[in-house]
Figure 1 (tube, rainbow, N blue to C red):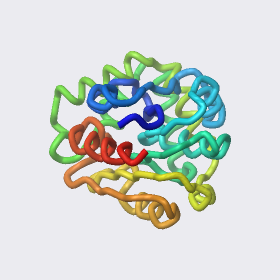
Figure 2 (figure 1 turned 90 degrees about the vertical axis):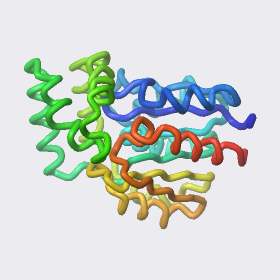
Figure 3 (figure 1 turned 90 degrees about the horizontal axis):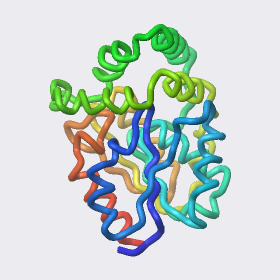
Length: 234
């Protein structure tokens, strides 16, 4: 497997740990890197920063917010994107209700309550039933958020609130696309991924059983196998 370089694009308050298992396994056979989404407060700026340091052609593997950034990277430079992996994500903009929730979370994080917001509000929605009480996994997730800190939470939440709707972008995607969903994902449910699959002619859809929103950490081996098979076609 010596295809295009693979760039992992993380979700909200996540870092390279989100893709640790996949990067370790796939990095032996292709160039692997991680996008930095910590420095910008808009999705277009995040995608622009990614593209500025990316090779001429590459595959993007984005989870949640990372998938949203991947849509924007495609809009900005479709000729450079050889393949897309869209995991646990959505093509739609934030609803007014979701924006209200984000604003409340941002205010509380600014007030020093990052751990409370992450552990009591985000985590219960992130994980499937089999991993929801996994203390080691929960602490790994919080550790990612803690490393990034409140300022990054504020910037990334602002970016997500102000993002463009990508529904119309779906039919423009012509590169090979792998879509991965969790059947217990309450943040980005399977039906959103079915919409993406129907609209992207070059896509394959896999729905993982007993998996929540963080498929790369909840089902690391299955996700790695899917990525390996996808990349082998290049």
